[in-house]
Length: 86
Image 1 (cartoon, rainbow, N blue to C red):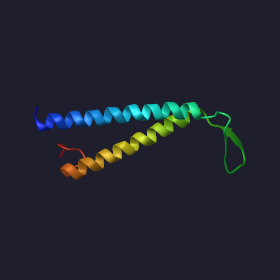
Image 2 (tube, rainbow, N blue to C red; image 1 turned 90 degrees about the vertical axis):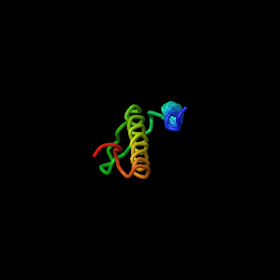
Image 3 (spheres, rainbow, N blue to C red; image 1 turned 30 degrees about the horizontal axis):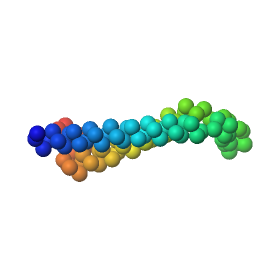
Image 4 (cartoon, one colour; image 1 turned 135 degrees about the vertical axis):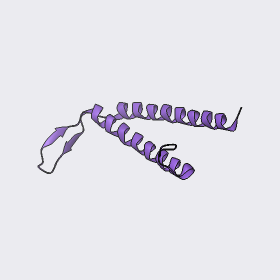
């Protein structure tokens, strides 16, 4: 097996384990979220937060950070943000 294939398998395994871990975390956060929590804005009006929106925003933020780390890693290893793209 060539070193490139080994490296790709390693990266895929790390990604799969990270996705499995984050999925478990999101399920636990969804279970722990209490829909009775209320958010107040500056006008002192009270709004209910839908739990799906909270989970979606959390998921979006975490995957954005993963993308940022991937872009930094690509830049550090190849000198390009998108390797192979001129």
